Image: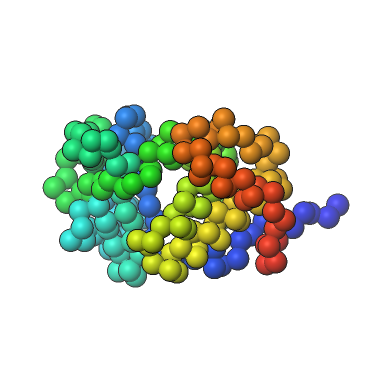
Length: 210
């Protein structure tokens, strides 16, 4: 029996030198660790993977020796001065003066209120990895919005648009249970959802292997 070809995105869509972690201050965060490991600050968790991670001058960002960045972000509230936890210590983590503090980002409230999506992936060692993220339809719509923002660098906007198209095509091709339904994206402004309709109807671009 022939195995189906593996799904893959071109490197221009996926290659970045940073990762953003969305901090939802409305819910309590739970971490799983081996016995005897009680570090529960985000910076301590990052150092379990790479000891060279350190907080930068920006309180929301950590960088390792290779220049890889990790940003802790949260939705910008209305009003913006509304008090809420900005670090893991406020959710039961170990207080750490050097830990990251989340920075408010416009537009993330749409992602925060989007339907949750859960899947199991296989890591490079062959072990299952549980992934919980926002709905991929919401990801595509949000990336489309980012691609039109003039306050982002041109290369970022181009990658945002490529990612929006790629995920929209992937959903249309392999996730028929996630039909493009504006009701599932009610956390987004209606004009933005309407503008994203074409993302979920186009054929895969050359270079995509699914």
